[in-house]
Length: 80
Image (tube, rainbow, N blue to C red):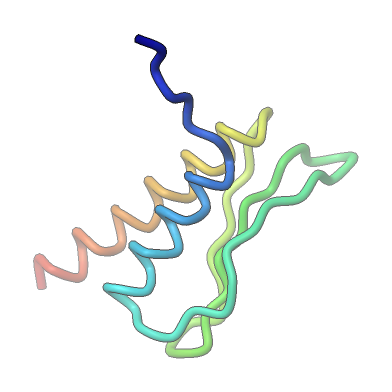
């Protein structure tokens, strides 16, 4: 049996779904490469706050950092 590997598309969909459920209106989740910074993952919202970003040495690391940041905000929000 071969295991299915996660792709960046899967990771972006997961972050999008997480944001959609907890924050509501979300415009997009994406990733791009910047020469000086490296990979940047971004979630842009229509609602209360404009966007969240996270960077990393690789695209996978940037998406992981963004997902962890979103989860941390959700956890803090639910604790209040």
